[in-house]
Image 1 (cartoon, rainbow, N blue to C red):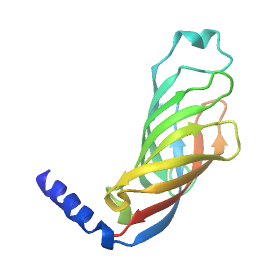
Image 2: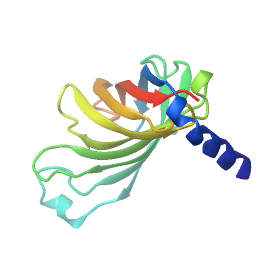
Image 3: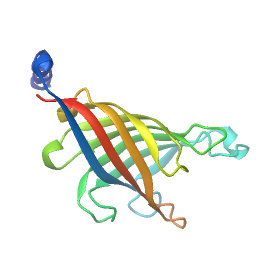
Amino acid sequence: MAEGLKSVDEWFEKLDQSKEIKTTLHFYYQDVLSGEKRTIWKVAQSDIISISPTPFGLIYMVDNLLTDGPEPDSKVVGRGQGTAGFADLHNTALQMGLNFLFTEGKYKGSTISILGRNPVTEKCRELPIVGGTGVFRLAQGVVTTNTYSFDETTSNGVIEFTFYIKHYSA
């Protein structure tokens, strides 16, 4: 741990000489709400759910695969982990706090964090990037997302993500 802290300290000391980098990433988020390989689990539900016109008050924990293609058996590049809760009494919208952990390639071990409102019934949504680690230290930017596919029988879906990231060289 001390070695890691030292490297972050050294990186931060050199930040003024670092170059701003713009990176665009594109991948798919495999939402699996049913079956043996579920990746989303309900962890809380408010009492208002029975009288609300939306699923207001439902909270889920998420540990979804990130893949380079929309097919569930596409190459895995990471995981999308965090919470998603329905937070709008009048429209179907999630409040999402997610960390995208990259497990392959040049970004392996790095993360990007997003936090924001996701109105899931809209075709294209936008969420803010609020930070990152590793290659993406001090990341900022925006994510666009849309539902690529959704199976009404299983409630499984594939969500397309494009990240527009500003971060700094080491």
